[in-house]
Image (cartoon, rainbow, N blue to C red):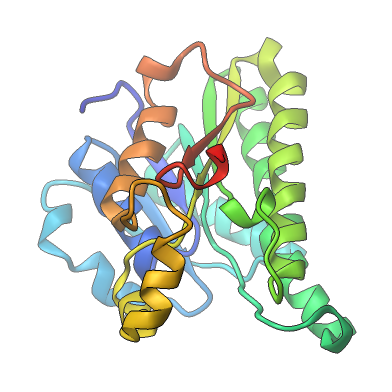
Length: 251
């Protein structure tokens, strides 16, 4: 797939889905800024991946819980790449805990990253596009937990539900400015870390039983969905949440 957009900023790109999105976008013709809290950790190794050959890759430090870090990260991405065409809000914090045991600090850690941080990254991006009178595309990473309730995932699901409504609100507000805002909502994705967690065949089959297609999507499939929503082929799509869940939420 090719695209006329040339630059993208992907948050949480050091592992898993974020890494695959960054690589997929580079293969689709984008120069990319990739973020993590620590640029000297796995993010540096990601930037050396041969899949980025011929593309510019700019590692950027970003802590979505801090307002100053958000502003600084966006400034660094622009300094490294020039105008940014696409923002992918992928970074997220997970929490598996019963509602009655969730602490104030845990609530803040999850929602500050998954919702508030994505909101203010999107704000930075929109200001950037509006100032330059440029179109843009935002793709948010949601989850089936935003729609399908499951015990122990309350804070994560609530944050992702808020992210989906944020997607719709921003899509309507910025439509007149040619800034499209969409989301991709996967079920459990088969990443290396998740594969370890699903090594128990009983647990694996229990989870697969909820998915009509009886398979977990691969991280590259999520990347493909993100790339599509960011591309000119999706020029008439905004305010949409694309479910990549094997039919889980269809029932």
